Length: 304
Length: 241
Image (cartoon, rainbow over all chains, first blue to last red; front, side, top):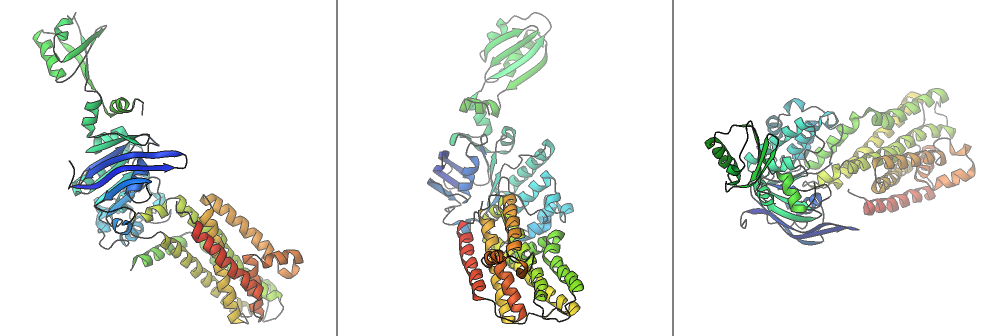
């Protein structure tokens, strides 16, 4: 369904290291302009997959096309068109922010204006600061800028927020969201459910080297578990039958003054309508829905 | 400026920003020749010991650069993923190694010129009397020592191990190479071993040329062999990640 507009096509990718299969039969396609997530626990094969796609590793078998090119054979040309932020990749401690940008800009024939990048990414104040003196969040900002300075069409971001405090992580998410507006295609590797759920248009869930599912975050959640749970408190007695009679409801449980209703579809509306009609006041009402965590458990049969 | 130029210039700035490495490679050799010049008062004397001080200063600086700083820096660049990051860009990370070598050799030349001029002008140490032999000794000494340093960087799994191996080689070389003490004061056995070490061969060649004779073919041959063997091994074995 993505044919004609996909910028990355991976088919039947296999990669094994000495004693361990890192990636087995991975296939996916990434459409132009989307933020595509590769989600999975540590050691699932995410980084190996991305490194093969970016031309840093040679796959054992399978085909990869990035912007119509073979990442190994056309590495030179491809590297002018992609930007990569690798996991656990540093810079020289004493290199200043502007020097890094100036240097990396010099690698490309038509680089971005790095002075403007500094302004856009809120790093102008830190232009003369040495890399080693930057905070974790500022380093990530610099890495994103370095990945963008060649004006790439595809950007790979591998575990961008690992090791960041929650504040810096949220700031980095805002930066990635800003990337979406520039129209660049982003491949985001992460093991954070929340990150994938918030940023990605679609994502591939990888576990133990294999793709378990590819879908939108919402689609994955719905596929795993479309049940909802409504929890509320009633002051007087409640006749359960008025709730069990609702078609959307599959289960009603009372725990003291608390009532838990489980069901599907437009459950909240159906339940509150019936309660109102029967003049029952529901206090402390909460709706619990499955999230990506639940989806992952349902898809792989194990906790993240 | 073309990318390789920007790369080399940036690396040079970063190198000079670290006071320790600049002191060790430039200031220390000059200080050695000045201190021993003040103590020994050569005054143009031809005593063989007078060729020891300036050549020892040169060899020490060269060994620091080649055996100590180069392996640590390059293994660190690999360990920190700097080479890998560069390999995702149109720039070939091998250029980063070339830039580092250019800078190191450049600094070695600067240190050599300073040692020769300061020693000669301020303390009347003689100039290298066989200048062609001196150039041959210096160039081959550089290539042999940097080839060994590169080989350490190539195979050391971490920057820490590279430093350890480099420092170990450095001190062993100083002792066996007649840098720590003049070769004439060493037991013949140690001098014999030193003849076959890159720093020992460098040191003896430099002293020979300084006193006016052509360096021994044995020493130049040893340096050439180290350059070729260690250089090829480094190129073959270099791990990029």
